[in-house]
Length: 115
Image (tube, rainbow, N blue to C red; front, side):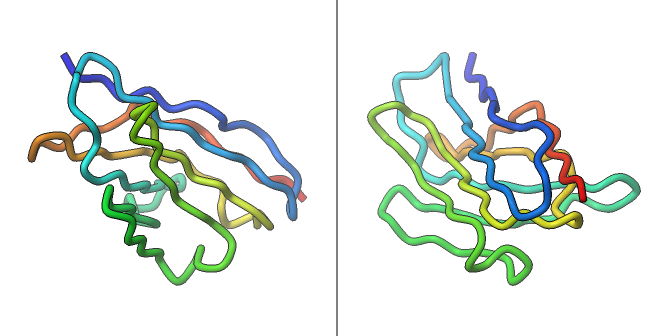
């Protein structure tokens, strides 16, 4: 059974950095696509970034130039490097991976940015 496990979240001061990881297990197949979403308290889940295995990336305007998404096929792990974090980045972050045309979601990880 395919599972995605996120790690790297936590509490950080505004202006700081965190790197989230999203590791796939239970499959011999690589991620074709990895994406990150987030959901702030009382808000709807929003998309923030997507990375294709072929290399192309897209970002929401709210995180462009601050966040960087990557995918290590050898480790079957996706990453989200978050720099210059702002208070409004506080949310539960979720990764989603497409493996052999099926979508899989991680359990979510809390990121809290303090002033």
